[in-house]
Length: 280
Ligand code: ATR
Image (tube, rainbow, N blue to C red; front, side, top):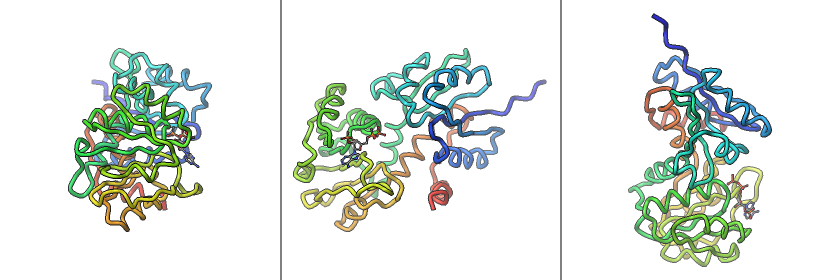
């Protein structure tokens, strides 16, 4: 009888060398003793469709998709999950048994699962949420929060038109707020999310006055380099519960690993430590 072939998957990006996904999936492959490999694929934007089409021919079970390919891949796959269509981006591709390419988005799930790790948990239905930024990550996070029953979402972006465009694509009411007013809309808010690049190593910090944010509010950042961003430090110093951005990266990877390698992996403190080691 033929032995089952080594299971193959990877991540497509441009550049891709900085991606932590190979390290993270490699940990799970070893932990679960899977006969498999997860590789970084540096794919130029003008080659992404060809590269995707080659996956079934190479016997590759699927890929994660990272910058700048998330929107292009949405258009290139055969079937798009409804959630990915609503978010407007694909971060996980699976090759189905008939060779068709299916595009999914696991960022929303990763965000919510990570948030649930806040001390005492987090209830998205309890109070309004404020999302800073209107890029691809913000879109996944807004869809996640609205689907989870958040009834009041305030979207704040430096370029207001971009936030308005996003609001118009979302099914539920979202209030767009001027960037200059970001510190003035925190009254009664239960969640503050930074999805901008502010606070990332090499970028200016996010300048926001947290004085009006209720003590019980959770503050989270999708930036994870550094892990403790100036925003999270300031929030913790004022007694807020904080959730760092690394957890979202780890949790969004779970469904892909399960689809390609047949085991649902867990996000553990050991996995976090292993990935953090690479971040220095
Ligand atoms: P992605 O799609 O990966 O989320 P992006 O499109 O580069 O990334 O978006 C980055 C976010 O950070 C945007 O909301 C951007 O605001 P603009 O839409 O106005 O560009 C925000 N951002 C980046 N630098 C900023 C700055 N100096 N001040 C305020 N917001 C900033």
